Length: 65
Image 1 (cartoon, rainbow, N blue to C red):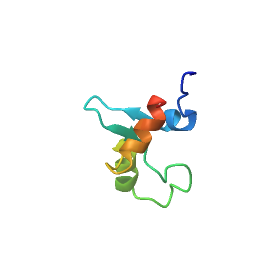
Image 2: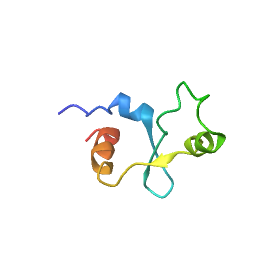
Image 3: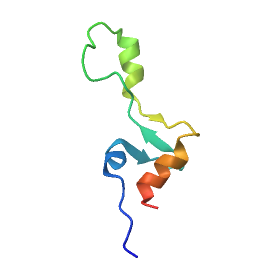
Image 4: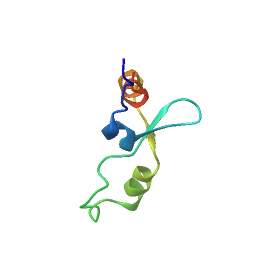
């Protein structure tokens, strides 16, 4: 049986954190940021973690199993 491949789209979007959770980038950061306050832009900078209900599916895509 051949090796299973990693989902390349997921591999570019998610990273595993040191504590085992999955990190993701924040949405709404691509354009039209002039309307946003500095506070909201600052909060979008830091990586967020994936919701626990989505974590098993993402883990399956990253490990290729």
